[in-house]
Amino acid sequence: MVSVTVKKSYLLQLVGKRISDAQLSDSLFQVKAGCDDVSIEDLSLEVTGDRPDLLSAEGVARALKGHLGIEKGLPKLKMQKSTLKIICEPAALAVRPFIVGAVIENAHLTEDDVADLFQMQEKLDLTHGRKRKKISIGLYDMTPLQPPYYFKALDPDSTRFQPLKSDSKMSLRQILEKHDKGTAYAHLINQHKKYPCLVDSKGEILSLVPIINGVSTAVTAKSKTIFIDHTGSDLQAMNASLNILCQHFADRGAVVKSVEVVYPNKKRVTPDSTPISLKLSISDTNRLLGLSLSATQMSACLSKQRISSTVSSKDSLLCQIPAYRADFLHPVDLVEEVAMGYGYNSFQPLAPQTFTKGSLLEKTRLQDSLQDLMLGHGFQQIATHITTNPAKFEKSGDDPSAIKELVRITNPVSEEYSVLRSFLLPGMLEVLSKNTHASYPQKLFEIGEVVVKDNKEETNARTELHLCAVIANADANFSEISSVLATTMSKLKRSFKLEKLDAENKKFLEGRGANAIEFGGEQGKENKRVVGGQVGELHPRILEHWHLEVPVVVFELMLG
Image 1 (spheres, rainbow, N blue to C red):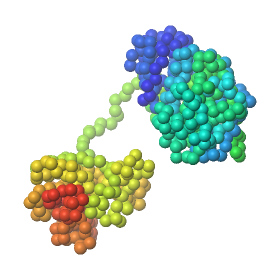
Image 2 (image 1 turned 90 degrees about the vertical axis):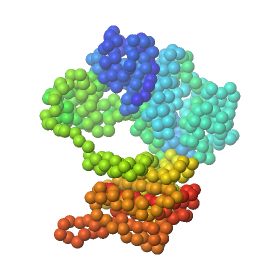
Image 3 (image 1 turned 60 degrees about the horizontal axis):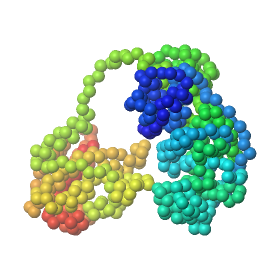
Image 4 (image 1 turned 30 degrees about the vertical axis):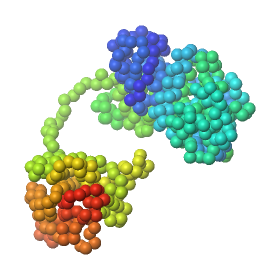
């Protein structure tokens, strides 16, 4: 959810109809912009993440007009051509691959309008733009600027301009190091030798992209002609966001004009405001919603959602979706729009046609049973993270080949959580190492999931359930832990025998480590040997790695 604040009086003025607080509250919820308290002037709306077009009073009013039947079908957006060009240089495109833009004329703004516009810009940057990584938005007063504009990469030390919320000129590098917005978003560009900037024909810097605009082009209530730019890596998302802003101004009566973007090898006119076309199956929609709507009725439902449609065949509608809608990935998204246009309150609740009885999964019953068993043995249950790092496995005696087989996380937040665990033991030893101040014996167990590579699986990895138990005490020994293993296997009704580990084993003391060998296979056929787990007394070298001063005996068992 994204929270935005709008003035109630202004919202109702845009809707153009007097409605009660109860109706307003229900209607806001129905269009995905719910509000807990509609009795006050400053409405705090909770907008669902899939509807960035509702991040302003104008966007919410547009949806409410459709829901209330005041206006239906595609909103009007008359796009005119401007003479403005943005000329892109390869060095800047290497940092931000795409740029789109539009010109707004006759933008009659008040101070409140400017505040609402900046709120929408900020929310779009934060959510739809993924904190400016995917999309960054710029708004500029065009009055002091001379076209065409250039998107180029400039030297961070010799290039200087006065950014917003600064009293003096700063170099591009100083902005990243000292300006609030610079320090917040420096990571997006500081790895490059030159930084992307938008510059006019006089050399006036509009902005350091995607960080901060210049003070000379700041949008105020006096601004009549505004230039909007979007830079980023996702052209489709950028076009949708630009259309959101263009429709915002069009709804206010402003003139919206396109901009020509000149790339090194092509030209593109932006924004592309062509409606998105999708076909909707009438029979599939009725089946999914449990309705029996005709093509005309279904088209009326879509019209309330500001979507136009025509009958394209006996069983389908060809739908025209506004270009500002960024949430359509599949025809099933249109089914949701039909349901919203029909009205969720209009659906007749039906009792389930089949009777089912809930019960615990077999896996859950197994975990509960083993938990009771281990608690009965005097063990304490713990839970550790499934994400970890390879160093912990190395400290726990795993050989390099096993560490190489760990499932790794792409672009981890930190090295501390860069892989998924394949065994529970390293996490258990870390807990023991952090509790050396506590009294002994310490008897711990964990029942948890691990992830191992498996090329037979669709994801090239599978999840297993493991049980691991450790005893740390001055007189802990192999016999003690193996007896706990034996009662556990008996509880599981699994037969096994212990087989001594070979001399290459580095985890356990020689002669005090074993594989738990099970026998499986179909009845009447030769049974297959399966390593179900390991048990033993850890080698002093491992204890030293974890700063443990008492013997530690362990077993880890694969449950399934």
